[in-house]
View 1 (cartoon, helix red, strand yellow):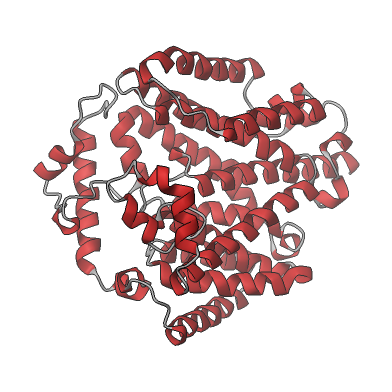
View 2 (tube, rainbow, N blue to C red):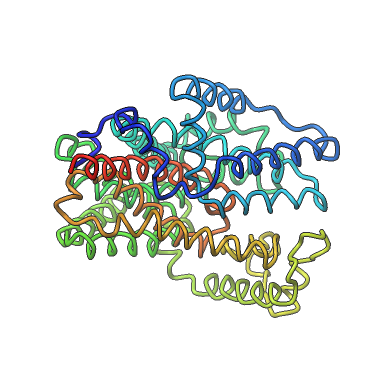
Length: 446
């Protein structure tokens, strides 16, 4: 039985909805966590100073209001309840940073995460067709972003002028802002952020191409565009993340032709890039980047130093006095390869633990364990026959696996609410509800 047989959640018999295995925690506790979010946020606003009011906050408030009216506040709360408790506690723990380091980032990140999860997850879980629609929109946007990056490298104008108009104010916040503007990239400001987009699209597109026969031409074009963008982006972390996720998908579903498909598409993409001779900075070509062993060795040294600093500082930077760069250099970290302009760990998990200490590490570990047990493992067990009906769910969850692997080599992840990673979490939450609903309805019917 699939979500098409189930329809919207309103078709589930009364009393069955709350029995979704993910919703193990009382609504009172969830309300308490949300109340603490708002209380700490409101308490710290005077210390933070002027908080930029973005239109996205008004959109989020409107979205929550509309969905609450349409679905009912009770059901909306249950949707929020499907967010793993440990992730909510992690974000709450993150808010504690405000007391030692007042910052708009620490204030807005948890609330943005909770609000976007409520909106995307609630809409996509309110019927499988909704989940399909949102997933398709996300994938198409990722392909368009990859195409934008290719064209901005090949033509430059009017793409540079458009980016300068959109991000001129944003660029002033960074010392390398002008350079970031000129680097060919997609629908994002920073070039490195393309890594997350290409990883997500690089996993979802081959799965959809194999399973969605009605849109095979669309997904074929998308695969080619994203493959070219991966070669041009120079984002090395995309390769192990996408490779491991697709290998896992092939093993679990026995779709071994996928290996041949990926190989052919990658070959065509590289040949296309070579023949077109796009006018990109050579240092961003992925083949050139893979040859820079000194960079990889330096980043590994940063991560080893970060682990030593973490062992010495159980509280992380909660008290606001951890000088990460100085401590890392004492343990042999060499930042000279980037002319002392980059000091990140290039491992999002280690970076978060450096900020939140061992307590944050425990919550992070529990969150990952819970998501693997309740979200990822059930999808890995979907066989090939069932996968023909649940391929959108598989595409989203395997993309989530890839993004979690990529966080081992990048500075952002679901725990820093990186946009693509977090949208994937929200989509996964909605799809998991649809999947559980189908199981519940099937058990009731039998």
